[in-house]
Amino acid sequence: MSNQSNFIAAALILAVALHAGVVGAEGTGLPAAVRAPERLSETGLYRDISNGTIAPRNLSFEPQYPLWTDGADKARWIRLPDGATIDVRNTDGWVFPVGTKLWKEFAFGGKKVETRMLWRARADQWVFASYVWNDAQDEAYLAPEVGIRNHAEIGGGARYSIPSQAECRSCHESGGTPVLGFNALQLSDERDLLAPHQKPLKATSLTISRLERFGLLYPRRPDLVENPPRIEARSPRERAVLGYLSANCGSCHNSRGPLAGLGLFLQHEIGLSSMGVDPALATSVDVAGQFVVPGTSRDGSRRVAPGAPQASALVYRMSSRRPSSQMPPLGTGVVDAKAVELIRAWIAEDLGAK
Image (cartoon, rainbow, N blue to C red; front, top):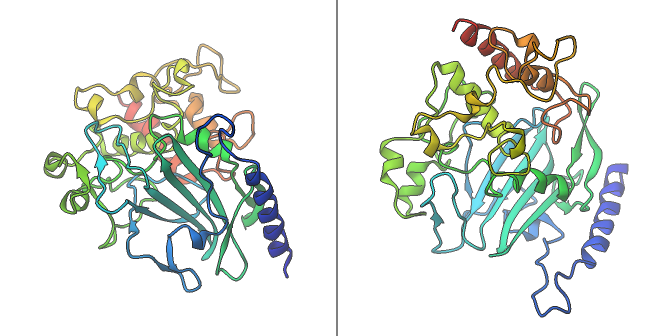
C-alpha cells in the first residue's frame, strides 16, 4: 500500500472515530444529527464508481462565474428528490427541498483528488462532507472533520489541502443560503464571455431554461428565461469583474453575514440590480478600508483606487498568499493570475478613464 493510501486509510479511521461521537441532541428527545456516508460510492453520485459512471438522476451544471481553487478542474452535479422543486419565489434566495444533494469534484492533472458533497438531510440540517480519492481512483473516503493539510502536490511547489468542515461552513453559511454556485445568475442562459475560467456549457448542463422546461422551479419562472439574469455594468470587463468578485468574495462579503459590519458588499443580488443599485461598486470604488496597502499612505489606500491598481487593497490582497493579507483567506494557495490581470486592467483603464 502506498504512503498516500496509508494516509487515506488513517484519515478514514479518524473520521469514523470523530463521527462516532456525533449523536446530535441525545437525551433531549430530538433526533440525532444525520451523518455522511463513509464512502463516496454510498452517496448516490456514481452508478459505478470503478469506471466513473455518474448516476443518471444526477444533473450536471457549470456556473458562469466559477470559484477559483488553484486551477483545479471541477465537475458539479445536483440531485433533487423525485417530484421535488426548488422554491424560487425569492430570486436571490433559492430554497432547496429536503433530500437535495450537490457534489463538486476537484481534479489536478487528470487525477481526481477530492469530491465534496452538500446534502440537505433534514429541514434543519445541511450535511457537509469531503471525500478523498485513493490512488486507484476507484473510491473516495470521508475526510476527517479537521480536514487534511497539504494533501496533494499540484505543481510549482504548491500543495492542495482538504478543507475542514468549519472552513466549509464559514463560506457556505455566510451568504444567506448554503448552496453556492447554483442560482439564477450562475445558471443564466446568457453567459458572460469574459468570465475567468468559465467552461463551455455541455448539451446536458443545467441552465435556467432547462430547469424551467423540466418543471423543477416553483413557481414557474418564464421571466428568467425570457430575460436571462445578467450583471448590468458600464463595460463588458466591469461585468466580468463584478461577477468574479460576487462568486469568489461575495459569499463572505455581503450584507447579511458576519462580515456585514465591514460595509463591503460584493455579492450580486438581482433584485438590487434591477433597481439600478450596485452595492459592490458603491462599497469598494474610492472607499477607504481598514487594510492599508503597504507602501501607500492611509489617505491614499483604497479598497479600489480608480486608475491606481497599486493603491488598491483588492488587488494587493488577491495577489498575496501571506496568511495575514491574502484574499480569499481559505481554499486557495495559488494566486489567480488571470483574475488579477482582469481586475488590474479594469481599475487602471475603465475606472481610470472616468
